[in-house]
Amino acid sequence: MLMEGGRAAAAPNVSSIQMLSVQPDTKPKGCAGCNRKIKDRYLLKALDKYWHEDCLKCACCDCRLGEVGSTLYTKANLILCRRDYLRLFGVTGNCAACSKLIPAFEMVMRAKDNVYHLDCFACQLCNQRFCVGDKFFLKNNMILCQTDYEEGLMKEGYAPQVR
Image 1: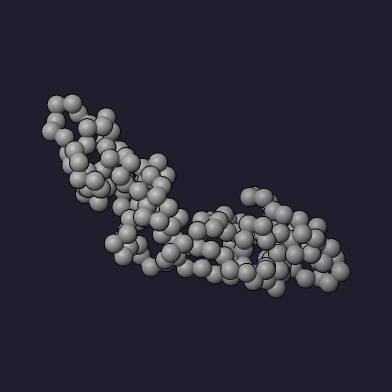
Image 2 (image 1 turned 120 degrees about the horizontal axis):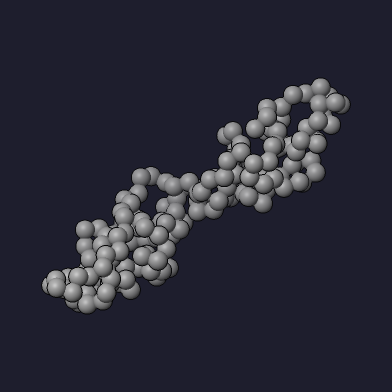
């Protein structure tokens, strides 16, 4: 059983963000966001440019990218956080249990080729939820807990794949 993050679309331009401490004896660098000199104690380096911490923001949600991670995404002349990149350009799919759309940024569970919302990843007979590391069984693309699997095995003599 495997917990994975959302699935990204076509190769984004992913760049790293570095926080650097400004040395007092160096000439102040210009900020790529506001074009003013960076006189703060720290600055960010991303996309081969220097930024005030407040100036390197996601074009959609305005979050400070230096605070939400060490990467940023660029596409269509936008600088984006991971969540907004996936929301705008990510590939979505449908949940194998409820058939509803799974947003590209949402955490999912996978079993073979099936993808599930976290809330839908449960025994499809008794609705028992699974935790990471729990044993589950897959029979005809149906997720079963160990109890329902064993009861079915006794009644019908089937042997689903153990995951």
